[in-house]
Length: 317
Image (cartoon, rainbow, N blue to C red; front, side):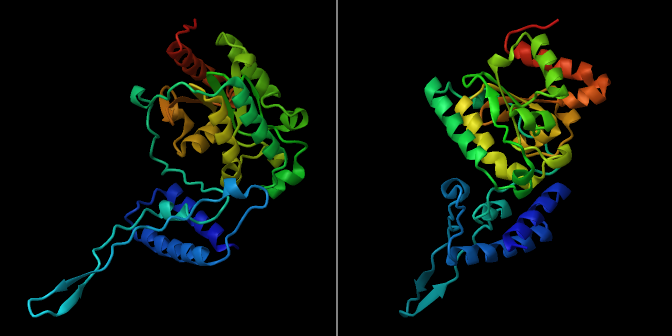
C-alpha cells in the first residue's frame, strides 16, 4: 500500500480515537510524516492527469531558525545551537503530502464552532452568469471524474446538483441512491418525496434552494460514503458552495454534517443550533430517509425547521 495512504489512515484512526496531539502516538506519527514529506520533496512530483492543479497542495517547508555564532573577548568564535523550533501539528505536515485530499475530522467529542454574527460572510459579488459558469465547470469535471474507481465503475451517471444558483439556502445530503443514479438528480426517491413535503411545510419551493450531496456517485448497495470517497469529492462540494454562496446550509444526516464540519459528534447532539462554516450558518438535522424509518423524530426535524425559518424571518405553525 502507498505509504502516503497508510499515514493518512493512521491520522484518521488517531482523530477518531480522540488521541491528543501531545501524546507519544502523535509524536511518532509526526516523525513518519516528516520522512514521507522529505521523500516527496526530493522525488518526482506526483500529478493527477485529470486535475493536476486542483488536487495538488503546495509544499511549504517549516521555517527553521538560522544558526548564529558568538565571539569571545579573546577573538574565538563559538557556534551557538539553533533555538528550538515548535513542532508543527501533524495535520499541517500531512497537508504537504501530495494525496488527492486530506480528510481530517476532529475528535468525536468536539462540536464545531457555533455561528457568530462576527463571522458572517459579506454578500457575494458574483453575477448569476458567473455562478452558473462555476457550477457548469465543476459539473463537467464531475462527469469525467474517476477518482473513486469502484463508484466510477458502478454508477449509471454522476449526480451533481440542482436548484437556484443564487439560492440563500443550500441543502446537502449524503449520496445518490438508486433513483438518483437513474435520473441524475439528487433527492428524487422516497427520501426526496419526504424532503419535498418538508420544503412545502417550510413555505419554500425546490426552485428557491440549491440541493446537492457529499458524493456525486452512488455507493454500491447505498452504503455510507467512505472517508476517502468524501475527500475525493470535497473539491466539487467546495466549488458548489463557492459558486452559490448561500447564507444557510442544511446538512441532512450525519454523513453530511460530519463531512462538511469535520466532526464525529452524533447528529442528535448537533441539532437545534447554528454552526459556522466560513461565515455561513449551518443547521444539522436528521436525514429524510431516517424519518421514514423512525417517524418519532419528525417532531425534532420540525423543531429544527421552525428555528431555521424563524431565523430567516418566517414563522411556521
